[in-house]
Length: 398
Picture 1 (cartoon, rainbow, N blue to C red):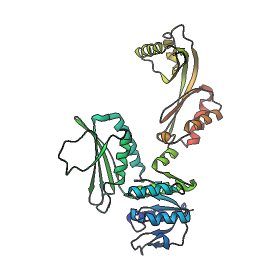
Picture 2: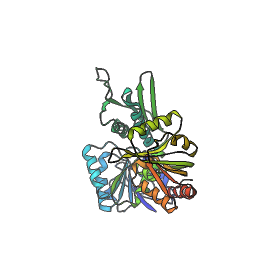
Picture 3: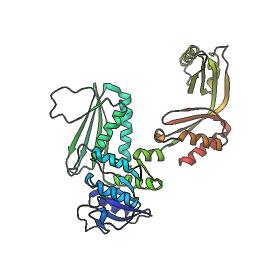
Picture 4: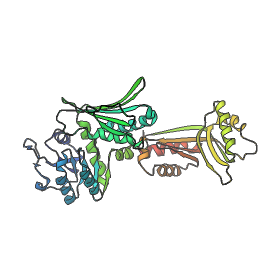
């Protein structure tokens, strides 16, 4: 049973956390902290962490930046792990959180929703794909009780998009004082406050004649509670470090699918003039033959060492285009197995894990290619069923 304290216990999310833990077999809500009275809550709630006599495993914080000193003092004294969902910290406060993470495990996220973090990933991909021809604007909407603006999530989205634009985008917060045309390197960030909106974030890509909008809206606060409790469980085996939602994605979504192909041929050309290789690719393209797992490096003499896979049935077409003077090694009747996952780019060692699983399954690996989200291996066909089963079992894929 994980002993848990709630910082911001009298707030809306704090109350939702406690309610969600009633009858829990994983968590014990030990006490809460809030500067406002919470006499109606059926567990101890103190004005300060210094008033609590209890030790806990983890503190989940949905309070305000003003509570940071009290929170960190308790965490240091009790060696408690921290899940920080509060936003609006000053740069100096953020540096204190980062310094604390060197001694205790800290999970910090501006938004605990898995969906919002997916929005960030999609926005980064869109920014890369669409390039500079599209203007980017972010609009966030929240209830009329929210204090900080723009939201921490909107700022995080802007930073993620800017990371794929080499930091060239300049944030523009509203345009009520602007008397000039929009600059190409701007990224607009706008806040709307009203009603009971839990949280809505839109990323707009505005081009000539079209607008592409990526959006996420939280229908209730339970989505943040589920994310925070998932973060608390994530920290249980950690001794220090600063983590975020990407850490969970990397752990749980490193490999989410496994695909397999049979009747694959592997062609290796250990020494081919590079110009001849380009000519070979052009001839293959003209005959609608698909190549996969293309890999190459240059030899000391300037020739290229190249390998690629293709369907067995297309091998005879390709071989007829290979220069007669070129050495060639061909493996027929092989198989290709591919492990894929969005969290792969955020988690080190996935390739080592996959190759270890293939080795333990008795597979003979003839070629490997990798990308940010994919690992493909050409292996012997007879080992394919065992190899596929081993990877799926290890990553919990049904």
